[in-house]
Structures are given as structure tokens and as C-alpha cells.
Image 1 (spheres, rainbow, N blue to C red):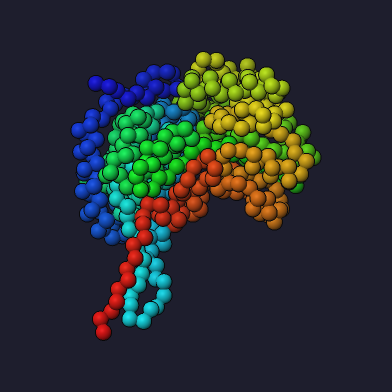
Image 2 (cartoon, rainbow, N blue to C red):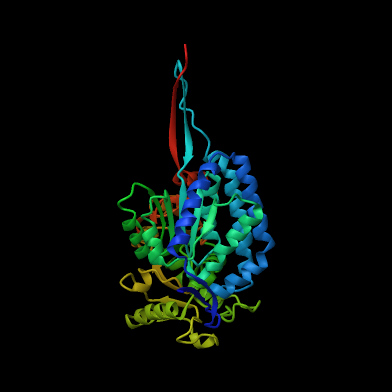
Length: 462
């Protein structure tokens, strides 16, 4: 029997393995989902909310266990992973409470002799393909809104964090959710791609790499269904001359290195005004050298390994190539004892004398590496921030709100931050442009992608 394995970056061991679902099981899952969704769509919002709040309660009861599983599965320090469980529950509760606004019927106004309105109707079965880097938070973005909207959900989680799918199922079971409304499958990426063509699926939400996103889009091309794609990023930060430098350094370095830089909205490139560039660099290097790279199961570790030795090799390759092209590395990897070539343990790095001809400034790195460039003014910063195939978020650091809003209006991005980065507010839609994908999740607008409008045009009896 073919098995799906999670190889832990902590020590290279097989942390968990599960058999891949067979065709008969896959068919049974989707048949159950179709049947369950018909009944689920007839429930009230209040009933759905009750189940989903109980789901949150169940997740929180197991927060420490889930946090430990995430640390072993993908390497984030144990001091940080339980917080993802709590944040997941908070985000879920926000979307539960936002559902009445997001799903409210629309009245276009009076028309003599008629009653007219538009309802938001569930699509049917939603197929969610989730990534490993934030295995709960990325998953909940679509799962809870889909269920609140009256859909059934089938989840395929990344092999690296397959236990998270089981934890979602466990929490929904403890919540008493009707059978078939939420299910999961342990399947390969190739099988998931084929399933996109299954006529029982009404919507796909994929979070992951750009190449796989294109593959999902191609697989769905012959079907008239909606596809949400949350893909890559190369998110920039801009430090203006008037920025609070201490705050900018602390926030941007955390935005670059938290979760070992494995975040689609992590900071991967920084542009600093020439008047503060040298001081910013000096402070950024000093802060980076305080990071503690090591075993993520230790409470004193604040920088764990990247997800695999292969990923670390790719990241090291980007850095070495940039240095060969004239970049300078300001952090000595030897000062991080855990840093070892051929392993997932990778020291953080700051690169200067970089430019956009280097892959490290144009291609997604997904690791604890950041390049920093000097700029003369806002216009140059805007030009460089927009010089990317991606467009998820952009962060501006300034004391001038009006200037930041003017800059933000010119940025090709889904979200503009001021004096923060690498963050998500569930009240705002999470959306990208260019190769970052299509569609959006969260906020009341997130319900639009998980429903369709249905018009009622009713002539009243005379």
C-alpha cells in the first residue's frame, strides 16, 4: 500500500505516515459530501454558527498537542505554534460573526406589483487544497466561511502537515457537525489535480506555489466553476526617511525571519531611504545576530529549521548566486552553531549590494533571507516595489499617513500596510494580484467566492 509520509525537519525522521486514499474511498467521500450539502444548505445561519463555535472550542482544548505536532511536522518553534491554534480559533469566530453581513439578501428597491431580492446561495462541494507553512490559518480561511455559507468541504492537506486535516475532522466531530459536511482525504498532488475535474466539486481553493496554481487552473479550464488561487509572494518593505527606525527594524526583521521566512506575505526585500539606510542596516544586523537557531522543540529557540534539506539547499543556492553576482552577506553563518549545510537548519541572512537582476530579489525565496537596497525617494521605492511578478502585500514605514496612502495608491498589491507587515486582518479581504493569484478570502467579501447570487423576481397577485 502506498503511504504518504511526513519527514520531520527537526531530525529527519518519519514523523507520521498514512495510506493514500483509494479510488473507492475518494468516491465515497465526495458522494457523502454532495448528499450532506443538500441538507446542510437548509440549516439556518444560527445553527451553522453553533456548530462552528463548538469546532473552535474543540480546537482550543487540544492547542498544546496540535502545536507540538506542527513543530515536529514543519519545524516552527514550539514557543510559537500553539498560538497558531488560538489565532485560528479567533479568525474562525470572526468569520462566523461576519457571515450574516456577508450572506445577507440584497433588496434592489421597490417595484410596484413585485417583490424582488437577491440571495447568496451556496455553491455545493468546496475542495480545499491547503499548504504546510501555516497549516491551520491558511485552512480556516476557506473552510469556516464555506461551511457557514452552506457548502460541504473536502480538505486535502499538504503531506508535511497531514495531521492538521485529522485535527480539523476531530474538532468538527467533537462539535457534532452532521456527517459529510466536512471530510478530508490523504491523497497525492497528482490525484488532487485530477480531482479538480470531478463534476461533484463546485469550487476549488488552492494555496501554494505558482506552478501548481497554474496546474490547478489548467485542470479546471474545461469546467465552468470558480477557482481561488492564493499563490506566491516577494513582498517588499519601504523605510522612508521619517520612519521610526527602531520600530521599522524590529518589525521588518521579524517579518522576514518569523516562521523561518516561510510565509507568502513575509518580507523578502527591503528598500531604505538613503538618509537612514546605513543606520537601518547596522541595527538590522545587530538584531539578526540575537536570533537563536536550533531545535524547535526547545522553548528558548526562536528560529527553527526550514521545512526540508531540499528547501534549505534552494535558499542557499539563491544566496550563493547573489554573492557571486556582487552581493555582500552581512551575517556570518558560523555564528549560528546549528547552521549546517545539507540539513534544514539554515542561518538567517541579510544581503546588501543587491539588485533586481539577482534571483534573491525577484524570485520567491521562502526562507530567512532578506535583501536590502538603498533608494533616493518615494518614486524610486514605488518603481522597485512594483518591479515584481507578485503582488500580495507591501509595507511602508513612515510617520506621514497621507504620504503612505499616496504611495499605497500606486502600489500593485492586494494589501498596503503602514508601520506593520506580515499580518492579516480578517475584516479585510486577503487578495493578491499578478502571479500571486486570483480570488479572495476573509471579510464579508470572502463569502462572495463561496456563493452565487440567485435572483427572485416575484409578481404579486392582483
